[in-house]
Length: 391
Image (cartoon, rainbow, N blue to C red; front, side, top):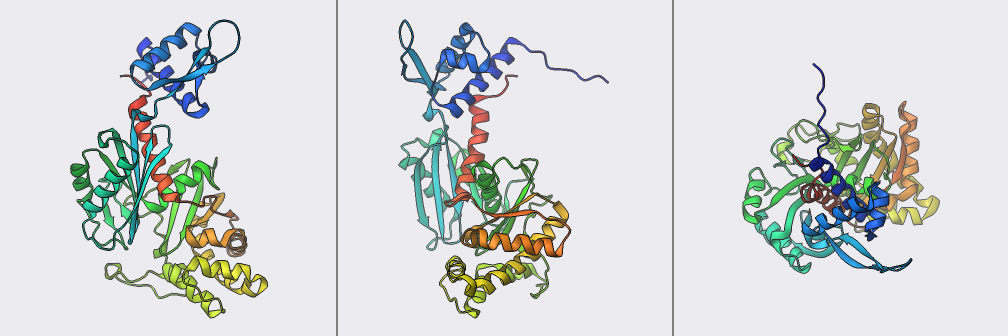
């Protein structure tokens, strides 16, 4: 059976040209009609018609003039920021952070709230979203998508949370409740996966299509990026690296009892603090403990060496299956350990396996989960608002 190609109808071609022009305006800033024509390969007349069409749709606006040449100054056009908004939410056991961005990606509102005094997940998210939009002076009806980053498993089929170790009140049915409450599209995504999205956008994995990100903090997790796309697994459990049965720690037989799994026992924040304290570097948190060991020079070397050996067990187990070219160490420990820890992990992995991935620290210093949530939300909303094709 021969393949059938979609004919290049004028309507379809206009839609494709509109989308190309909008992407150029986002990437390169304000442009004149003539410059849009040059970049898209369209004639001056067609480019002018395109801009008029986008103005009528409320997607672009005039933002100034460009002087030069004979005749009147050329008008500069840009994507209208308020044509749509998104909200990203980073949900943790003690706090929730929400940020509102316009369709250009500019973050124009942000709030942070404690979650210690409430057991109402819907109320927590509702308040955070409403206040983030309000701080951005954006009407809630203009918020086209909300992406929430949470620890634990998200069912790829239903989009609901199925298990969150640190959020026992977050459960199946919560997604529908939030959508009913907020009257807009709401999406759950694993927090470590969102960190990997941010890392691929502007961090240590920029322009890398295949990599894994290991998150080391209070929890331990893994994000898998293959061909530029997140791999979730059949049940959403891909990357739950804390449950790896590794030597050096007892293996719980019943995860429903909320016992710490084996790899988590070796490299989680509590274990890092205990390891550092054993070597004379007591600290209030894991990041400070690692930083103290690094600042101590050779005296702190044994802490980093042992931590790298432990981390290598999980990294090596992942890499002999996936064979990625790059491993990013993130989370509070990965960030604090920097190159000193990453190089040690790279050496240890190469010593115990046949694969030799490059291991690097995260390239992001601020709120990678929130940045990843906003990125995913923006990609979806731009598709909806800009439209890549017309049926």
